[in-house]
Amino acid sequence: MAPKPQVIALEEHYLDPEIKQHIAGMDRTGGPRVAERLDDVGQGRIAEMDAAGIDIQVLSHGAPSVQKIADAELAVRLARGANDRLAETVRAHPDRFAGFATLPTPDPKAAADELERAVTRLGFKGAMVHGLTNGLFLDDRRFWPIFERAAALDVPLYLHPSIPHPAVIEAYYKDYVDKYPTILRAAWGFTVETATQGIRLILSGVFDEHPGLKIILGHLGEGLPFYLWRINMGLVRDGAGPNWFRDAFCEHFWITTSGFFSDPALLLCVMEMGVDRILFSVDYPFVENAPGTEWVHRIPLCAEDSAKILSGNAKRLLKM
Image 1 (cartoon, one colour):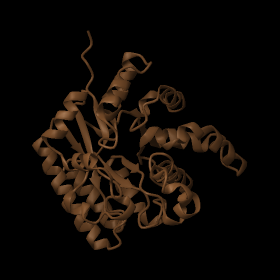
Image 2 (cartoon, rainbow, N blue to C red):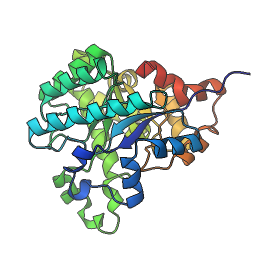
Image 3 (tube, rainbow, N blue to C red):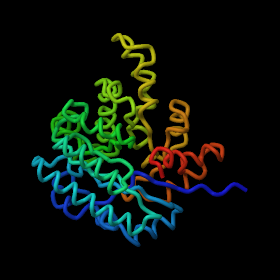
């Protein structure tokens, strides 16, 4: 009998005590139970992992991290401190935790340097960036030193959502926010903003300049696998090559199952991108562990493909 594959979950969040003090307004996470779990990077979290059959969590800071810190020097200080503390957590439980770095994107050069420090000195597996950086999309040329460094280090950048830009909230969502506040988050706003980040990165040409760049999107690719054919078709009308967008996405992007436990949606992603590009995640503690692991073990795929999603693809991508 083949050995049971490990289960690695890689969009699993916590809050650093110093960064948390700078998160305000709609960016604050609601609910005492979620807040308690975000603060726990010890035995309580590990007990929940054990109960659900999760072997390893790749820990990443919750949104919006330091992406909305206007003072760039403060963002750098906070990110470095958070990464040092996360490294201590990983060292205390090296068989249960790994880490994605917090990057001070308000200072792109410092963010690139911090990525290198986090990977080469702290042993992190890449980094996570949340939403816009003080209103700017990441395709802006000033952020390209981060992409250059990630490609050189051969580590992925995980693009995670954050609350949409205030102008977008005003134009698109304000009529429904009071009654349905998650319209800004998992119900729709997160998806629109993060999918737009991914589209803009491809259009920007950053992958032509840095062909080794690797990007992870959660929530089954923020909807983009479902729209690849149509986006590609539309861009061909503008003069793009016949499969340019679709090929770029499938070459440079990986997606995770975080907070999206749907058989039809997963199978479509397998058909569009191939099973080697899909990674298991839960989105803990915003989503419970048990529904994720219960689902992933019964998905209608062969044992070899299931093992890839559970941990094999993550081990290859993150060099675990």
